[in-house]
Length: 300
Image 1 (cartoon, rainbow, N blue to C red):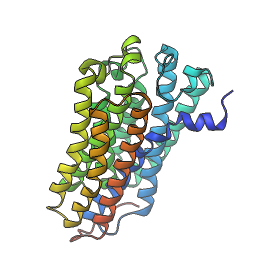
Image 2 (cartoon, one colour):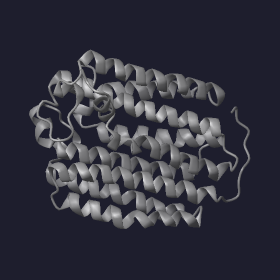
Image 3 (tube, rainbow, N blue to C red):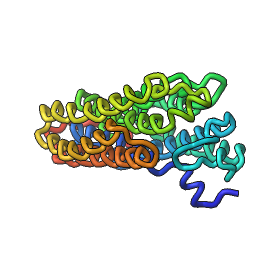
């Protein structure tokens, strides 16, 4: 029977910035269109994001575990693959997490825009079928695209919509940056697991591209957010402060490109998440100091 610590590890704490950062950055974007944003909506968006990430990580643990993909894992051990917990228990944990996300999401949608319920349903289905079902799209190399869309475009723009009342070009620009960071986290994870994934028939983008090209894909994904940072200064000069994290991103990028493996890639994954989270906090603070606000009335 898995211990509490093992269940917490099963959430994969290093990936939690992928939940926090889009919401924080989306709140920053919301401040650009409404400098009196809704606090209940902020909390609701955060609950949805955290529960979805917990759900997708448990779902991946379950699906990869029953397929044997995690039998020869390089990184932290999974619950099912290591035998610490039964597949049924991990599947139940995933379902509970998705239910929490669904309840919070429905409440948030009914208070703002009802059709977001449909978006939330698609998010949950995408989370499950990433590694679940008979033909998981994560096994076909589409994981990075899905992460960019759901943890970048959908999460940031969705947060801006429910918190600030509308989506604008600032929200889209921030979403592109966050999506790139999030995809870089997955690229690092899949780069580490190339050999074991290939042996298990899991054709991730890293397996398809190969070691060399995957490392440069990571470098591109870590560069794009800082290009978008410069673009965002057209809307608010304080956005330029996001470049403070560029040297740290460059350091991690050089490590990955130069051939980091094993435990070094595990550290790079965590560092990438921290850079993503740090950038989102900087952008939140930058836009919280505000430009001309556009007042909006919304349901929370």
